[in-house]
Image (spheres, protein in one colour):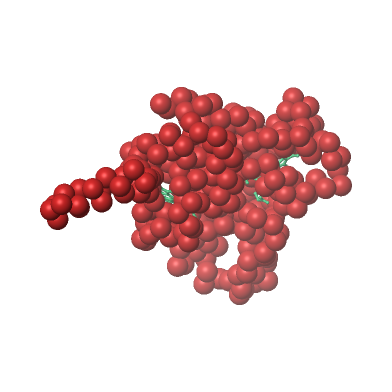
Amino acid sequence: MSAIQSLAVAILILILCGLPQSLLAASPNFKQQQQAGPGAQADLDVGRQAYVANCSRCHGLYATGGDGPNIQRAPITLGNDGVIKIIKDGVPGTMMTAFNLDDAQIAAIIAYIRSLGRRNEPAMPTRGDKLKGQAVYDGNGCSGCHTIDGQGGSLGPELTQIGSLRQPDMLRQTLLDPGNALPTTRPNRDRGKWLLYTIFRAVQKDGRVVEGMRVSESTFAIVLEDAKGNFHSLSKANLRSLEKEPGKTYMPSFKDTLSAAQVDDIVAYLSSLRDSSDLRNTQ
Ligand code: HEC
Ligand code: HEC
């Protein structure tokens, strides 16, 4: 056999032995092929867990966006390789940092993102009854501070699409122990880099104290919104001190006022409030 012939035989053997599986895994269709096989649902569950743990707080539970952009179609527009590169390297100078995830986790995350929008993703599983939850919401003054579909107050964040942004456990935690993990975005208002609901305590040189959430801040002034929704514009030159009050929030705890079943119901209701594009079939 000539050298060329033996090389050709060697290549043939490699192909038959399935070496190109790894190459195949990098092709844009690899997940569709894998999904056809057994264990596809298990893969998606792994992907969902990894996605929720690492990505959902910025891109939303269903990848329709939040602090970060909608990435439901990113595997299609950027390709698997493009998404892999972004996950590994991040986007310098943005909140999209590099993630230290192994290749299997990244592949599972991409498979999960691809699965969204293709089927009408059901809301995250919850224990409660959403209709009862809506009644609990209406009966406990929530709308005094929160807006849903244009109805309600604005001291707290709008909840119209909260089910797309937060997983049920986080909603439950906010109801029982608010102030623990303050949301960073405030839909309908300017988005800032800071924790928008952090309460500040400003002591003025004349001794007067103003407390409120930071609405805006410059080198010379800060604007605080107090518990009643009044705005205070304070010149920094007039301040004796300005301090954050970590853990403090205007969101009351419902730990002692709602039963466990009522909390489950309200979580089911809030989880059902979703961005309509979650349900749109993007394929
Ligand atoms: C702390 C917030 C944050 C987290 C967490 C986060 N991202 Fe991002 N991501 C962003 C932001 C902001 C951008 C937009 C960057 C820019 O301006 O180009 C982005 C961009 C992207 C893009 C590019 C979108 C496009 O169309 O260009 C992809 C893909 C992406 N993220 C995937 C992920 C995945 C997958 C995870 C989890 C492993 C993740 N991100 C976690 C904030 C985040
Ligand atoms: C006195 C005003 C007030 C009332 C009443 C109130 N909230 Fe809040 N809520 C807030 C504020 C302020 C925040 C933002 C700070 C925080 O998370 O603690 C918040 C945060 C939340 C969040 C988290 C939003 C996010 O983006 O993660 C949820 C969910 C929520 N509230 C639901 C409710 C429900 C349900 C009720 C009624 C049972 C209720 N709130 C009653 C002021 C209020």
